Structure formats: structure tokens, C-alpha cells
Amino acid sequence: MKDTKKVSRNLSENEIQESLNPSISYGVSVFCYAVIAVSQTCPATNVGKCGDQDDWVGEFFPGISKIKYEGPSSKNPLSFKWYNAEEEILGKKMKDWFRFSVAFWHTFRGTGGDPFGAPTKHWPWEDGTNSLSMAKRRMRANFEFIHKLGVDFWCFHDRDIAPDAPTLEETNANLDEVVALAQELQTKGKKSVLWGTAQLFMHPRYMHGAATSSELGVYAYAAAQVKKAMEVTHYLGGENYVFWGGREGYQSLLNTDMERELDHLARFLEAAVAHKEKIGFNGTLLIEPKPQEPTKHQYDWDVATTANFLRKYGLIGEFKINVECNHATLSGHSCHHELETARINRLLGNIDANTGDPQVGWDTDQFLVDIQEATMIMISVIRNDGIAPGGFNFDAKLRRESTDVEDLFIAHIVGMDTMARGLRNAAKLVQDGSLAELVRKRYQSFDTEIGSQIEAGKADFDFLEKKIKEWGEPKVASAKQELAEMIFQSAM
Ligand SMILES: [Mn+2]
Figure 1 (tube, rainbow, N blue to C red):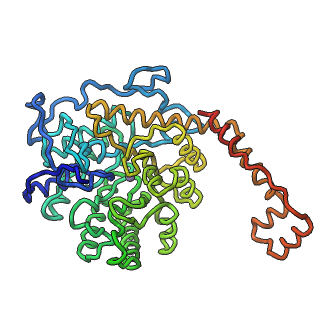
Figure 2 (figure 1 turned 180 degrees about the horizontal axis):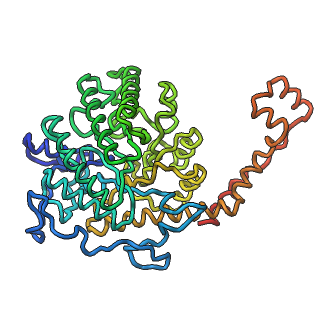
Figure 3 (figure 1 turned 60 degrees about the horizontal axis):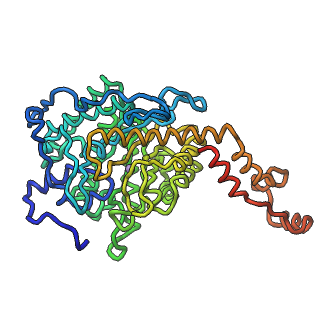
């Protein structure tokens, strides 16, 4: 960190307050408010289009029309080469396999700021404020974006779509005003919310966590915030609600009562289940595992840890899991492993489609462009017969150096095309059947009378000892891993 250039002056109370809001991201940018706080300004070329009112005139993306499928030979960057929404693959339309969603926080609040540098993105519609009118203008830009991109869903954090205020009542009033506009735009554009969530990690009150904070007042504040976020998600017709424990973890076990914190987290989630019933929200509650960052240890480390937590506290059946690929790799697993762990535990609820960098090793939230990885993801999704009412949320952001408005479209297009190629490849593997046959053959010794006795729990050790004495040394077959890889490759 010695080369870090920090903002050299002290920030005023107002600037700190403002800096809490602008750039919300699950990634590294949460670390350093001060750098992020450098405000965007209204570009000179847009004089007359910016101001303190929601007075933006005309389109936000005037040079870009609705993105169309043009097929693999197209050289047009603003077209789909592989994603063809209405095309049926294995009996389901592509759009129904994916249920793609734009993440409001990355696409509309991502500034390109990082712990070492100031924002790099100066979108024409941003006026440099975090005002309510700016929030509304941004929401209108969001709906034009998802319409032109051709996706049906969007996801949000409460504090990203509307500004924080000094009191909870005023903050909620801000949120209500923006949500009313979002509802109007949704109805007009026939769009809906894939999921909503509460942002419980950026404000300093959450420094010890939210539901796992050592402070009762913070636990209560978080409860009030989640209550409201669940209510607005329900109001907007959201199909899911996500819990991501941004700071639910610890920095040191020396000062932490881990058992008490986990008990509190369980009580918090139980209260969320009760509130869901109280308001008649029928959406799925989802937990999004992540192993660490910004905490040293986050309690919902990975899918298996989260499943164990849900079982211990009797919450299985109330929650499913939102698997984020970049979080999977941070926990030392592949995305495919996490999806399969969720699937076989009947917990697969949603996918945050992104990826990390294999060398960098932190949560870089990049658009996933690896066709092999996408194919493995889609193998799990096909085995699960889709993930509705969940979908594929692009919890992914442009690189700091990508600064053109059209880059927002290009990033989502390549992300959607990559997943579409994954689906097409996985479907080829399913139709070809030789990979499934290889796996079936590998376990065929259990497809016998004694095998079914074992699998039914009816073969005790005495019986098996008797059998092996009869049979002698068992024959052990090849695993055929390289052949499996060869078959997999043939579908790329
Ligand atoms: Mn995520």
C-alpha cells in the first residue's frame, strides 16, 4: 500500500456522508471511501442536459438501438452472435434458461474508482450529485439500458437506487420516491425485479457487521433496513430477495464471540422469514456465500458451509443459495463445484454471473468470458432443469480502463453470448450422451442387486465381509478422465 495516493485533505462531514453513497460494489471499492468520494461532474458538452432537476432530455444512449441477434459471423460489436432469446434449446427458450438481469450497482453506480485511484467513468447523464433527482434520472437510464439490451430483469441494493438521509424515515421516503418511478417504468417496459437486497456494509455503523454486530442498536437498524428492502422488493414484484453478508464475519477471533454472532445471524434470518410471511411476499430468500474480503472471514464461506448453517438452525426449506462465480473461486472452489454442491442439496436458487482473474486473486467482478467455464455452469443448470424463479444476474463491472458508454453494452453482450455458447455446448453434450454414458459406466458395479442393497442402506459390514471373501481382490477400472476431457472439448 505504500504507493497509494490518498486524497490529501480532510473530508468535510458532508463529503464523507456523500461518499457513502456513490459507488456501491461488492468488490474492492468498498475499502476506500475517500478516493471514491471524488465527485463526477457534468461534462461541458452536456450543458443544458444536466442540473439538479430530473430534466434529462431525450435518450440516454442515443447512438445505440435495440441489440439484435445477428449470428456468429456478425462483426457488429453491438449485436448478439450466440444469444438468440426466442430460440429453443432442449425444449426451453434461451431467455427462459437465463432470465438475465442487469445489476444496478455495477452498471449505474460503478465509477471505476478503486483503492488506488479516482473514478474514471463520467457517464453523460451523471451531474456529480447524489441527489434524489439524479437517482430518478439514473433509474430512467437503467430502464432504457435494459430495454435496449433486451433483458427482462434488474437487481438492486436499496442504497444504490436512492440516497441515504440523516434519518431512517427520510431515507425510506427517498427510497419510496425512486421505487414509485421504477414501478412506473417497469410496467411500461414489461420488466421486473429478479431480486432486491439491503446494502448493509458501506455505512460506518456496519463496521462490526449488521446481524452479527456486537452492537444491539446496529442489529436493530439492520433489521429495519431489511424490513424496508423486503417490502420494496415485494412492491416491485421481485421474484427473490438476497442476503449477502458483506461484513458478517470477523477480523480476529481474539475479540469475537463466534457462537453468539452466528446465533444472532440465525435469529435475524428467522425474523426475515417471519416478515416475508407477514407481508405476503412469495419470492425466494437467497443467501450469497463469500469466503472473505473485506472481512478476514465471512460466515457464509461457501455453499457447503452455508448449507450446514441452514441445517443447524432449522432454516433448510426457507432459503436457497445465490452462487457467485467469483466468490466460488475465492473460496478455493470452481463455480461448477459450488453449483453442483448447491444443486445436490436442492439449494440452487440463482447465479451471479461473473468471474475473477486467475492471477489477481480477489473479487474483481469481471464479466465471465470463458466458454469452457460457461459450459460447465450450464451443465449444472441443465441438470437442475433451469434455475427459475432465479436467473443470471450480471454482478459484473467494466474494467476501470473501459470508459465509453458503449462499453456497458459490449460487456453485457459478451457476457450473454458467453453463457449462450455455454448453453449450446452443454446441450450438445447432453444430446450426444457419451459423457453421461462414461459416468454411468464408471458406477455400473453398483447397478447390481448387491449395489442396490448398499444404496438402500441394507448391507451391513458382516454381509460385505462375507462377500469380499467370496469374490477375492476386486477389479478396479480406469477413471477415463482424459477421455471425459476429450468428449467435453469436442463440444466447444
Ligand atoms: Mn454478488
